[in-house]
Amino acid sequence: MATLTYPKSVRLHHRKAFQALLDKGSTLYNAVFKVYWFAREAEAADGPDAGGCRFAVSVPKRTFKRAVKRNLLKRRTREAIRLNRSLLPESFSADFLFFYRAPEVCDYAVIEKAVTEAFEAVAAKIAAPADPATETPLFVAESDNQNGSHE
Image (cartoon, rainbow, N blue to C red):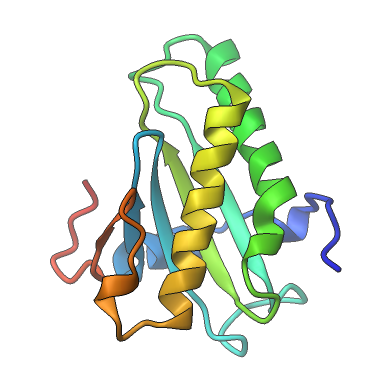
């Protein structure tokens, strides 16, 4: 059974990890988030947290000028991740960046639903990577970023 804590080992905070995620990762979209994700090899992961998934949350200052709102959205997103990360397979190692893109402050239920759908879409994608017909209709999956653009 997965633990429901959010320790430092599940936080994505290294510059190299962010750069690899943005350069080599895949992207999923919905009305609330743009989710970057990159599956890591277990032996390529660094440190004692070689297994498992790591997460980061970003809320743009351009959209939400007040830090209070940005912090509220980050807390809600991290809580939804904490409670729903068990939807991902236990042996799966990946990095995730949840980029908040909704123009208004969403309720926790909306954020949790979007996080759940993102995890289910990633789990379906890793379960059947060769079958494009199994993609979740709410999410539009962008293939690996070969052109290097991030927007």
